Image 1 (cartoon, rainbow, N blue to C red):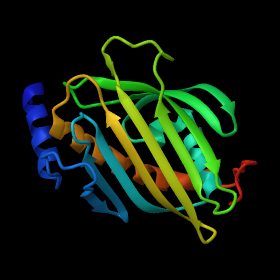
Image 2 (spheres, helix red, strand yellow; image 1 turned 60 degrees about the horizontal axis):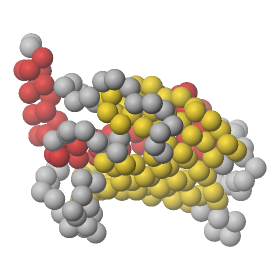
Image 3 (spheres, rainbow, N blue to C red; image 1 turned 90 degrees about the horizontal axis):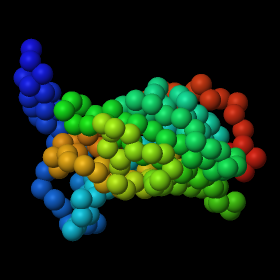
Length: 218
């Protein structure tokens, strides 16, 4: 099969398997994109911009310490974050803050995307709610030939322990992928990647049992 026919087949299958509404929606209206395996993925368009916002709601088996350990294990992102081509730790400032670089693999002929992210962890001492913030930071790693730099990225996690062995997660993010990507393909890729990443996270959490952090009270 030629690369063109393969691409056409790929896009048609991807498009037909999604319930995505392509038309831009007013800011504030969340649209359910995927509801599977007790993972709900929503999207909304940010009026007047290229930004797409996503929200994921799900329950994960594990503890806050396990989730922090997984997200801090940058070297293992190829196994825990969907479509990670490479990832490495740039620097760890403290137990609650680190900076890493990641390259996300996109289907041909769209170019791969990269960005550098600063991630911070904090737990509210009264509610025990875990807050995780991941923001794109510019000019840390030089732009690479053949890879497009993500123009804007912000992700926020709110994680509440339910009992002793489950986590209730609300994850929101906004992204401007930079470069040229058809809007419908961008939205499809974002919703699909979010869902599959949370499936991988759910499957990977058990391997981080026994991890502890001084700022956390599970």
